[in-house]
Image 1 (cartoon, rainbow, N blue to C red):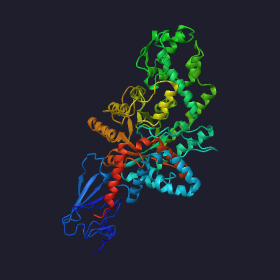
Image 2 (cartoon, rainbow, N blue to C red):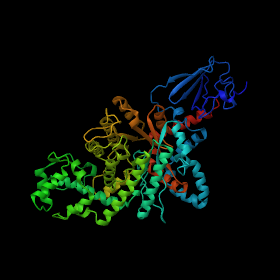
Image 3 (cartoon, one colour):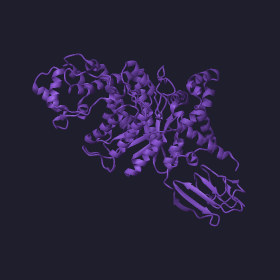
Image 4 (tube, one colour):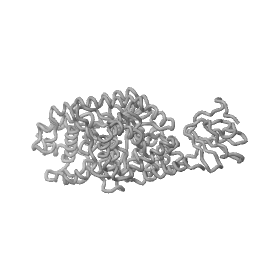
Amino acid sequence: SQIPPLPDLVSIIPRIMISPARSLLKIAPCRVPCTLGRSVLCGAWAPGFVSGKPWQLRVIANGFRHTASQASEKTLERQPAEDVLDFKDPTVAFEAINTRQLFRSWLVFKLCSIGWVVRHCDALYATSRKVLGPTLTHGVLRYVLFNHFCAGETAKGIVPRMKHLKYFGIGGILDYAAEAKDEDLPKAEQPLDEESTVGAPLSARKYEYSGEKICDANADIFMDAVRAVKDTTPEGFAAIKLSGLCDPMLLERMSTCLVELTRLYGRLSKDADAPTDGRTPYYCIDLGFHLDWETFSTGTRRLFKVEDEATLRSRFDKVDTDKDGIITFLDWSESMRLSDVNDLIGNCLQQGPLYRAALDDHELGLYLSACRRVQTIMDLAKELGVRVMIDAEWIDIQPAIDHLVIFLQREYNKGEQPVVFQTYQAYLKGMHESVVRDLERSKREGWRFGAKVVRGAYMVSEREKAKARRVESPICETYEDTEANYHAVIETILRHNVGHRASTSPIPGKMTEGEILIASHNQGSVELATGLMKELGKEKSRVYFGQLLGMADHLTFTLARHGYKAYKYVPYGPIDEVVPYLIRRTQENSAILGSPGVQLERRMVGQELFRRLRPF
């Protein structure tokens, strides 16, 4: 027998299975002869596997099953694969990686399961740099840690990895993991212990403010990331953090002001002797009531100097945006501007929390500069057709981020596809109610809803801060509470969009289909979402699933195989700058590394590695 000529070769296919032989021949990808003869695989003989026995070649590619019998070697029968999500099939989960990469995955999972290694990996890294030098240290880490969790160092360098993912139907969420540098590199917050997350694929990286020039440099980095999405994964996303575009202390000041404006809405409706509750977590503040003219007038006169009835009436009419005679919180939040607060507090009868929270002229100038930076990024994203996810951050600055994201969504989410995606952290109490308000806001204002839903990344630090301040913790008390909140948010968004086609642009007062990315490594959450999609008849084109590169492949590749929109969160950047970030992320996500889902994936990696290496 001879190897067939080149024209007889089948094009690249992801998987080959020969039965009834016990062994499974897997080539990913490979070139296989159409006429097997003696089973020539990639120019290597494989006698004895099928010799003298009835056999069948089964090729599974792009969601279809092809068969060829020995009697009819050149006939391929095309059948649709069963649409059953089996997340425990290692041949699907790891079909995109070769045996060497599979061994690296096993090694990474093994190392990350050792608690003291995770806790002290930053110290081990520093020691290695001193003893072995940065070149050798990074050379080793490149093939162990960096290549597992990152796609490359530059936008050009990540192209092969992104093309490989695209071949299997998987998109990318690009995050340039290096930070702009001045003389001192911005540093990230270190977690307090191993349980600093509750299982969400979300980085808790923080930027340290070093001046407006660093913010401008970070804006350029984010714009490069947007361009990289266009060049490497056009249907993907870019991820940015607003704390890199301005002073985080400014965001904290803005958040304090916005929280006090929210509490003012409640104080206007209360009696003069009613206590003011400043201990309730922000997202748990009761906002379900409304203000009529009499209540608004009485409350305003109690707290502010009023010139005359006409001025007060004019203020009421300005806030009552839909002119129905009542002010809801959506009316209130839509009409209030940070730049208007100074005029408002000038008439305060007492210097209370809002008076102390107002921004001065210099801070307002920095705020406007931050707005210009983020608008420049979004203008580019809109021009290139790239979607941008705004990462959620810690609670002290999150109200300001919410405020800015709503402002951006009003401007950039009016077409057939949302450009700006808000991130909702389900481990925060009251987050479900916040999602409901934003869904209603998008309907009444006429823009398309876009959301990424995560569990959260700052659990321990938020609880510690609340304890130190002697206020109620903003974090759900138990994992089960977080899980219920997470699932409620997903279900609410999916049900809200039912039956509203994406082809029409948003119209004020009408619901239009939005988009949601479910960021989860939890198999149960993914199954709940896919089950709801089937129940509601939701199209797969507007619901996305995201996992970190190098983790939860059994979820990502199985979803992609069955036609769901699956994405990998892909960090990239120079190795000497990204490795410290990867170390921080390993520590931040230490709870994920010990979760049942990761333990299952580690077992699947071991099973697949054993299957590939055994002789028969």
